[in-house]
Every structure is written in C-alpha cells, then in structure tokens.
Figure (cartoon, rainbow, N blue to C red):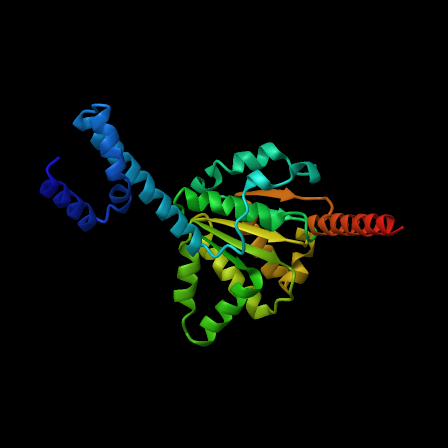
Length: 264
C-alpha cells in the first residue's frame, strides 16, 4: 500500500470530519484486502458505517437537548404491574403516527403509576426519529412564561415552545396555578393546536381541571383544544414507588431476620 497516498486519504477523512471511518479504516482495509473486496464493497461499508455513526450522534444530541429528567424506555416499563394500561395502545403510540397526525396524548392517574415514564419513553422514541422534542414540568413552564411576560419576551417564548414537534408537559395539577398562569398555558396550547403534538400528564381527572386552572372558562377552552385530536390513557393502579419501597423493606427485614438467626 502506498503510504503517502494512504496518509492523504486519512487527512481527507479528518478534513471531512469522518471520525468513525478514521477509527475503523486500518482494520477494515486489512480485512478488505485479505478477503479481496472490490472498491464498491469497500465504499459501501465505509459510507454505511459513517452514516450510522453520524445518525447515532445526532440522535444522542437530540435526546440530550430534549431535557428529559431520566432516560427510560418502554422496554423496562412493567405493564404487568399496571393491567389498566392497554399495552397494544402504547405500542401503537410508539409508531409516532400520532405525531405525524399532530394529535395530542394525555396520561391521567394518581402519583407513581408510570405516567412520566411512559411520556418520557415516547418522547425518546420521537427524538430518536428526529422529531424536535422537549420535556418540561408544568410548574417550570409557567415560571418561564411568567418571566417572559414580565420581560416583554412572551411572543418569543411562546414561539420557542410552540415549534417543538413533541412537547411533554408533565405534572399538571401538582401545584396551584393562578389566573395569569392559566392564561399563559392557554396561549401556548392555542399556539400548538393542530400544528404539533403535546403530551400531558396529570394526577387530576378532567372534571377537576376547573380547579387546576382557577377558572372554568379557561379550563374548558384548554380541554376543548387538547382533547379535539387526542388519545387519553387513564391509569388506575398502585404506585411503583410504593411497590419498590415495600420490596426494599421486605428485603431489609429478611436481612435482619437472617442476621438474627445466625447470631442465635
């Protein structure tokens, strides 16, 4: 192999920012020469691996920018613990057809039943499919919109939150919201209405959203837009956190009993 020519190839790869190819080229070319691959096969392999590498980095970058509080997938969700959830319905949602159709998704249920896990898992699938995705708690959202309102930057902030293909608004109803907060929330929902998909989670039934948003008229207007094109997943079950707590206490008691038996 012409060493000067080979070094020039590596310099070109570096200039083109083909980092993955730079990493694999030495070993791969040895294999390609030994197995007598033709030039088209060599190019096909190298370009396919580089494209795969760049896509992986882009996906990871998208996930990092999405603001997820944790990285949990559908694979680790315990559907057997929550029989009220239709697993096939969740798998259908994971196809992202609801995003293509600009439909909304609402998870309702008491604390700890997996609402945020499911919302984040679907958000991660959206990010992996290169849909711009962002997660934010309802309280943080209202705080940011209020700040923008007082700084005369509200249109700009609404535009930012409105552009995401998938916006996850978590924990609606966990903290009280005043009339101004409710108005700001309504403006955002209106801006996203029939343009992009919003995933919402709440521990409050829709009948209690009048209290959540402090005003029956605003609550009705928000629900009207959210539910027009929407899938609602109502989860009725026990808390995962309480389950884990019980299992921990059971294991702890077992360890204490074992130690006591050994001492006696």
